[in-house]
View (cartoon, helix red, strand yellow):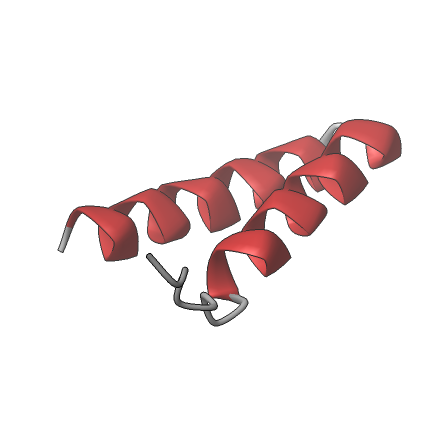
Length: 45
C-alpha cells in the first residue's frame, strides 16, 4: 500500500514539474518511478 501511494504521489509531482517546465527534474523523477516499477531480483543468501 505504501509503495502504491508513493508512486501515485510521484506521478502527481511529475505532472506539476512538467507544468512548470522543469523538464530536468521531471525526467529525473520519471527515472525514479521506473526504478520502483522494475521487478526486484531476489538476493541469494
